[in-house]
Image 1 (cartoon, helix red, strand yellow):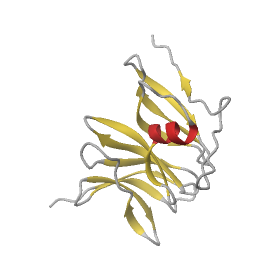
Image 2 (cartoon, rainbow, N blue to C red):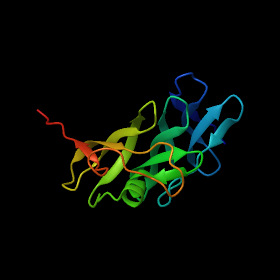
Image 3 (cartoon, rainbow, N blue to C red):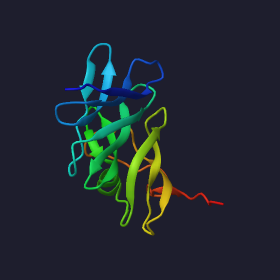
Image 4 (cartoon, rainbow, N blue to C red):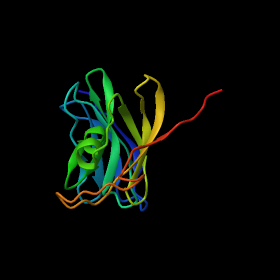
Length: 162
C-alpha cells in the first residue's frame, strides 16, 4: 500500500514532532522523538479511525488536535499519563463545565506550558466560533483543578464578521 505522513508541529527545541500518518488502522496522530521514532497516539471513539495531532507545548508533553467522530471531528488533548482524551468530555467531567450544544471540532494550538488550548467549534446556535480553554496541564490523577474564569469556565472568544 501507499505510505503517508505529515508533520504539523514541534516542541520548542524541535526534539518532539507531531502530526499524522497512515497506519494499518487508518490515519493516526503521532508523536516522534529521535529515541522512540514515530509513535501512534490512537483515536477517539466513534466514526472512522482518523486522528491528527496539530500542535504540542514547549516540551512535547501535551499534544492537541482532533479525531473523527460520526460525520464530524472532535478536539483531543493528549498526555503521556492520560493518553488521548476527547477535550469536550474532559472539560465536562474533570472541570464540571456545561458545554451542552457545543462541538469543539478542532484544537489548533496549545500554550508553552500546556495550560491554554485554542481552536474552533460549532456553538449551540450552529455557528462556527473560536474557543479557548484553560486546564491544569500536569494533573495528578484524582486531583484535577479548573483554572480560568471563576471556577474554570470555558472562555468563548467571539469575533464579529464584516
